[in-house]
Amino acid sequence: MIYSMTGYANKVFQLGLATLQIDVRSVNQRFLDLTIICPEELKVLEHDIRDKITAIISRGKIDLRIHYHKHDTNKTELNTQNLKHYITLFNQISEFLPQAKFENISQIITLPGILNFKTLDIEAIKQDFLYEISALASELRTSQLTEGQKLSAILTDKINQIEKIIAGALALMPNIRQNYRDKLKQKLTDALADVINNEQRFIQEFAYFCQKIDVDEELLRLESHIKLFRDLLIKGGAVGKKLDFLTQEMHREANTFGAKSAALDTTIQAIELKVLIEQIKEQVQNIM
Image 1 (spheres, helix red, strand yellow):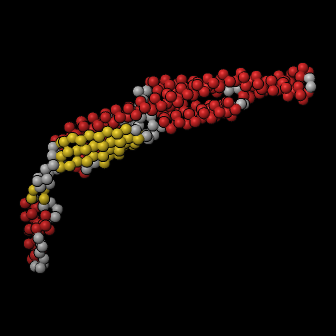
Image 2 (cartoon, one colour; image 1 turned 180 degrees about the vertical axis):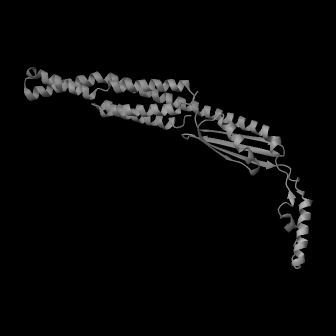
C-alpha cells in the first residue's frame, strides 16, 4: 500500500474538567519535521506526544495543535495564606508610607498567588491522553493511505501511457531506418550517378546513421525502470525516495531518446514522455 505524506485528522474528547480538541495535518517533506503547539499545562507531555506520533508516522512535515476548554470555571479559590502574607507586607509598608493604600479589592486579587485556579491533573489524565494521541496518529495514517491510493491510481495511469509510447516508438524505428536508407541511396545516386560503384560508402553512411539514431537501448532501459516503478507501487511501504530516484533515471532516458530523434513522430513521442515523467515526479514528491 502506498501512503501519501498529505493527511489530516482531528479528535475532540473530554478529560477531567476539560474538553480537548486536537488537530494534526501533514504535508510532504524530505524528512520528519514535527511541530507541537499545546497549552502550557500540557508542555510537560510534549516528549511523550512526539514518541506516539513518530512511532506511526516516519516522514513529512506534521503540525499538531492542541486546544482545551475548562468546563468548571467556579473552581477558583482564595489563597488565604498568601493573602495574610500580603496584608503583613502592606502593614509594614504603611509604617514607612502612611499615605499608601489599596484602592479596591480588584487590585488585591491581581497579586501573584492570591487566587488558586483549578488546573489539569496531568498525572491523572496522562494515560488516557496519550491513548487519544496514538489513536489520532492512526487516523492520520488512514488519511494518508486514502490519499496514497489516489496517488497510486494516478501514477499507474501515467506509466501505462508511457508504456504505450515506448511500444509505439519501437514499432516506428524499422520504418525510420528504411526511409533513411531509401533517401540516402537516392542522394548518392543523384550525386554520383552510379550507386553501385559507391556501395561501400553507402553502407558506411547508413551504418553511421543507424548508430546515431539507435534508441533501442534507451527505450529498453526505460521499460525496465517502468517495470520496477510498477513493482514498487504494488509492494508499497516507504518507497517514495526509491520512486523519486527512478523518476530521475526515466527522465534521463527520455532526454537521450529526444536527442536522438530522427523523425517528427519520435520527437513528439519524446515530448510526451517528458511531460508524463514530469507529472510523475510532481506526484512522487508526496509519497511516504
